[in-house]
Image: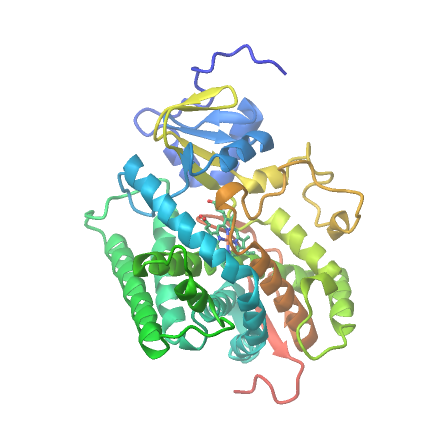
Length: 440
Ligand code: HEM
């Protein structure tokens, strides 16, 4: 389709109210607002003078592919003036550390970590003692322990607690489109700054302890810190290691926990799917945990869970310089948002899009339309934990159906679109099937 619009025009969009623009409508119900605008204005619409929303998969992909060049992805829960030079250097530092970390994420460490996950999972669920609990809290606890173990192995003591506080301190700041500066006199901001500082202090201590206690790196790295400290050409500075660990630990906490909570909800409320996942799990004959390739039914359910409820339902980028996106011209610091949730439920790309249908992933001939499945993002800043996240979810499903009865009375709880997409107030009981378990 050729465009007749000039690339300098702004996309169409609601004008909004005097002084406050669209902020109030948007904050009241973000998803309803975005849906309404999508219907009225199409795949690209403007939210205000500085922000546009893009829901065309090819354009989203183009922007993601140009992250680090024309767009940056850095964001903070407080208002910070992003200096483009500084953002470019920060991105370079992050990318160097990320490449080194990637090696650690995908090979031996993932393997060693998978073996340690089972006791962590059991401990977390057994601690609920069969009581009715908020599933999100339990999954956050598991994800916090899992990510601390993955990053720091046996040295992870004390880390899940500071991570929890860091995430809890970010949550209230992420619930609104309004950002406040660090000096703003607010309890929430002070809490966030304190929590961020404590996390950095604890991580730095762990790095220094490891360097002091085992200056020679082990031949087989056991956790991500081993990998990062062994990196050569270039070696990573303490600051790089610290930033990567903190970035990964925060990214591997709330997002996987939300995804796991949706998965538990599906397994607790969809008996037919649970039966398929159970049969597959019971058929695994070995003592050690199965690889993802041995669990195709489970994998299909997880893919479908991530399609219907991608935890990062709304993602943003900032234009680094004057640039174009499709037919639209962007100025430096313009914001572009897109929603994997809306793309994943668009009937143009998905048949019967709101239906949970794992079969669509089991047909080798069928594959999704290009760029329409993005629960892990795409481009140079695609999730580093894609593989690990899938493995953690598959193993959690595997142990859950083999070892626990899960009962719930509020399977119909509504989705909550805030910083992350989570089921609101979803509670359940995890009743161990093993004799003697969970009585602590
Ligand atoms: C089901 C689980 C997960 C989902 C759905 C998920 C989703 C995502 C998404 C959508 C992004 C890209 C955000 C953007 O484009 O701005 C992202 C980034 C990231 N994820 Fe994940 N993630 C998951 C698990 C994990 C795990 C287990 C780890 C850690 C090992 C991890 C580490 C990261 C990191 C470090 C980034 C930032 C990458 C960068 O900016 O270079 N994620 N994740």
